[in-house]
Image 1 (cartoon, one colour):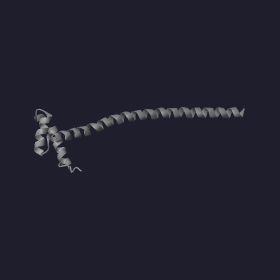
Image 2 (tube, rainbow, N blue to C red):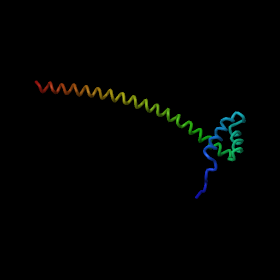
Image 3 (cartoon, one colour):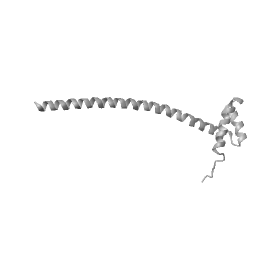
Image 4 (cartoon, rainbow, N blue to C red):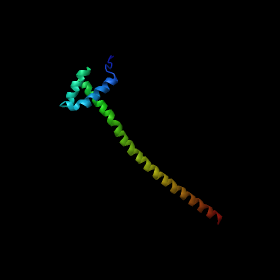
Length: 107
């Protein structure tokens, strides 16, 4: 059984990811910024790169979901409108045929 444990708290991870974003312009590449900051907090540059990618995916996932949800909501609203219109037509047709049936029995 592996005895892996997280050496860094979530606060340290968040701060390291923020530092990469804040100091990216001070370095020639994002990797250089990650390497420098990783050395300062005591993790590997690859670990910091993974944290940055995870944070980026967390930020983009809800945006994509919101777009999907918005499109889905519009589709469902359109469907509800069509169903209400169809129900109204059926209600009127039912009333029309019921009246026709009553008129026919009366004669």
